[in-house]
Length: 130
Image 1 (cartoon, rainbow, N blue to C red):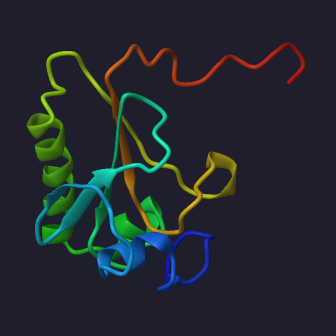
Image 2 (image 1 turned 45 degrees about the vertical axis):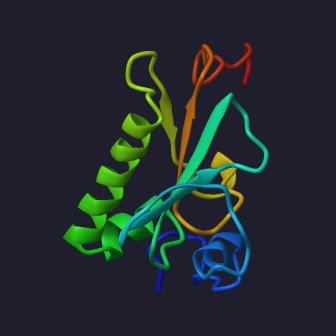
């Protein structure tokens, strides 16, 4: 059972279906631990998703349930993708959402890799009274 409040892993979520090859993707990288592909609705000139090859609903679930090899392999894959795309000189942003308030849309842990333009501040300061 996942350790986050997102409920059990849904084997029919879009990333599970991509991992099984039921839905195509524009693959950037793949190894035994992760699959990286271009987002279908990019929010920056470079917007790549990196997903682990396992049934993890969130970062909380992944960090508690994945074995050491999976955790290390996944994060190495994220670094490999950034290097292969030549993003290290200009910079990039990594983002992982968890849960409803963060805007997590797919209940499969994943990291967004954004680059290719100035990305600005991560969060905008709240207006007075918020």
